[in-house]
Image: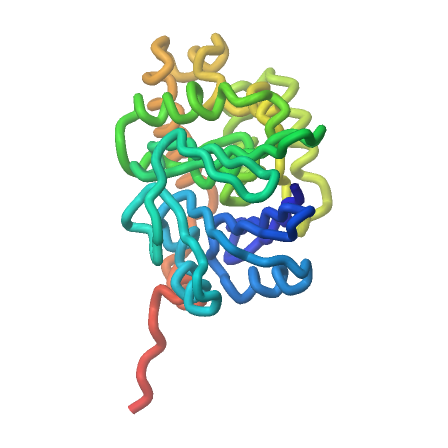
Length: 282
């Protein structure tokens, strides 16, 4: 199993997962289809399926165009709001692509229909992988936009947090540096946070920080460490879901305090990403 990490848009990641024996490929979270097809052509693989973690435009906007360009393409996900969806998946469902197994893990919190995908290969010494979209990121997690904090806790700690520690985590965004700066605020004496933050600040701006391993995440990601005394102390709460709730609110405040994007810049990005149309010429 080979994973191609494809940076797109401002800070998103698409992924191309290749079954190296059959040369079949599966894409995860298609935002820029033409860029994906460049990689597909370069790797000389047959793209048959798209796995979409959730319906947000920066993870699913490319599905319709890709399906038009590749008739017969299968687009899978757990939310009917996903663009060009051909079949809705259920929690615990398993898929197969050659030797690659996929277990579908419903991970609500960021959205109610968020699905993460746990992949492993038969008789292979390589570690498994999880494509976690915006449910879990390196040293952080996505904002809770839908559902309850209890659902988000179950997704992070009970579903994703119990995967094998060697699992490689491929998330949806490059937010590692900001996540680690917040993690340092939560646990200023955590040496694992300090070491990872120092590594993330290395002079390699164009090099992705994914993947991490789940075992590493359990050492420095505060959203997976809600039972730790140091994290509880920061939040002033004891119950894990309450700790998580405070962490989410504190993280949002932390983000707002860090260089807010000006309205003009937001409009420019929206125009570049196709959210705004250019005025018609009269």
